[in-house]
Every structure is written in structure tokens, then in C-alpha cells.
Length: 132
Image (tube, rainbow, N blue to C red; front, top):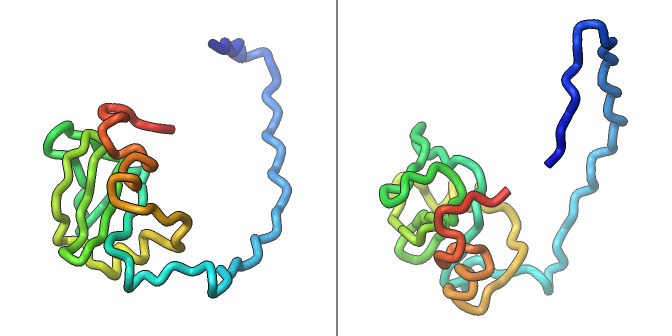
């Protein structure tokens, strides 16, 4: 455990150093042969670590009352949200377009849905745990 000594009124406070300006990263284009064809995937999913707001409402798990750490899933049947406690529900307020906007580029491909659940920590192993 780290302990910090509290500053007293007689100690001089120095301004924080300004962060050096970093150039914006160059755009990264995934080579064509490495791209995933989103139209042939049976499901797509991504972890959403923070609060998820849909239609001006913050999503809350009805089973464990969690307010963050979601897995957002898109299948042919629609968009679903899964909590770390394994409770999964359809989310009709999230359109497939909104899903694609939130997901961003594909970074990994799982051989099946159960593998995706395990690799992202939504198989129940981290139930009740918020990861940092």
C-alpha cells in the first residue's frame, strides 16, 4: 500500500508539467487479405468496459444490478447485451448500425461463441468483478 504525505499550507505547490504534444497516430489500414468479412460472421461481439447508454438510458443488469463491463453481441437475430454474471438479454433499442459504430475495427476472431465468452471473460468466471 502506498502512503502519500499530505501537503501542508506552508509547502509550495508547483504547477504540473505540461504534457509534450504528441503527433496524431497515422491511419492504419488493415490489408485486404487480413480483413474479416462481417457479412459472413455468425456473430460479432466486443467488450464495453464503461457504462453503456442506449436511448438516453444507462444500461443496468436486471440480475446483479451491474452498470458497466458489458459484452455487446450482434447476431442474425439482433443485438444482445451480456453481463459478467452471464445474464444476457436482447437490446432492441440498439440498432445494428449503432453496434457497428461502437465496435470499431475487428481485432480478433474466435472459433466459436463459447471461446469468445471465455476469452473476453464473460463465461461467469468474473461474475461480480469489475476489471480495471
